[in-house]
Length: 244
Image 1 (cartoon, rainbow, N blue to C red):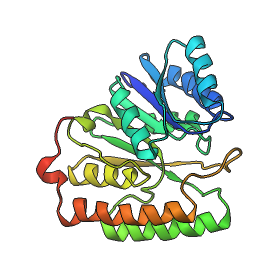
Image 2 (cartoon, one colour):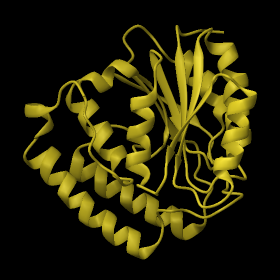
Image 3 (cartoon, one colour):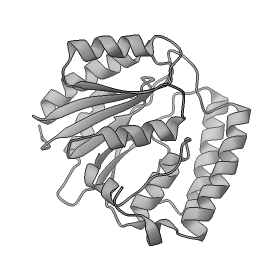
Image 4 (cartoon, rainbow, N blue to C red):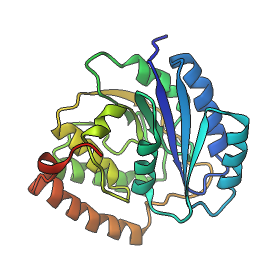
């Protein structure tokens, strides 16, 4: 099995008490097989359930686990930014804490790494969601692919392995789910090299999506237009992004 020098596995979590323990434990077991130097970081983004208590216990049991806590919910983008900032290893792997992806498939991402690879991007083999979410997701994907000129087959798949050094050059500003578009667009424009790997996507067993509701979709549309103006029309990142 291929091994990397060091990896931070990172999970943003919001009201994920039912799933985050298994995600963390699965990640710990998987990391042992793909690196000798690892840590798991979880950002608790103002959860109102028992997520904080679950994470506190995990931190006591496993010294490789570090918890970053937002006292109030700041949004998905803010949680990702906190996790990327907290990561200390050479590579960063992240996926969501709701268990719609399996941390054990990190093995497949590591296997795809070559000396030329900067990002290993997962893409969903098949989306396991209600029909309305599949339809909205496909429309969203096609719209943003045209608007932002994405080359990836699944830019919205939150299952990625990236070199941490990328964030010495790429600065992220989004606080919402549009952070994935901002991140991939900037990495693409800066010439970072992508490899794509198929991953499984599972039915959400607990909780509900924080993205697929009409007020949030409206806010996302406004943020999408603002992001397009900054990174496509004005290309601000190519003029100003640099070390954080």
